[in-house]
Image 1 (cartoon, one colour):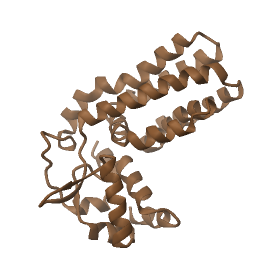
Image 2 (image 1 turned 120 degrees about the vertical axis):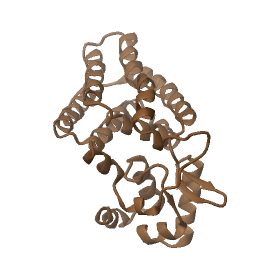
Image 3 (image 1 turned 90 degrees about the vertical axis):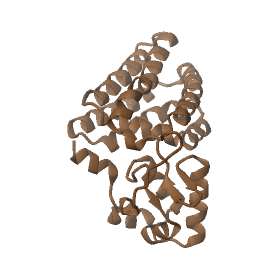
Image 4 (image 1 turned 180 degrees about the vertical axis):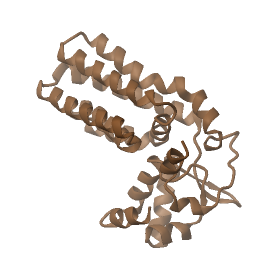
Length: 250
């Protein structure tokens, strides 16, 4: 991951880089580290490093544990449920605005994105597929003139995003289902079907994560919080791309 970090460090603040590494699961939930580790690995001074960690703690992405240190937060199902509620509540209303104002050209943008998703499915590029999924949904916000709402969802729902990305590793058909649901949403728009049909597919798509929770906890039990107690994992995990490591293990 060091070569990637060198590229990303150019002109980008450590908060943005570290946040991306946490949400994209390059950094393993439950990994302990010190401010010194962050300064060395991300090539920053103590002040910007500390400020980044404070901001990330406010978002629930890192946790300060008295007498134990700092840790990449494990996945907290209660917080994720709240973040899911935030995302769904905002986006459902955005979809209503979008359906009333969208132009035919936006359908082409969505279809182009879908084709890229299909390509990622063939190559099993989970991380890029997740990025394309995010871009697909952001189109609705932008077309509806709700970019600030998209920024709010992005900032407040980082843990929910980690859960969604992890869910793509559960079974081969998870990404296929996401594509099918996206296709159904675009089809409803193309045919100018009623809003109810569009929202049906949207809600099915967004709520699917709830049905996957139990399977995720069973497959990745050490990534989830258990009564607020987090197992200690050493900071060598900061230099390993966690998502790639678990993909290689199958």
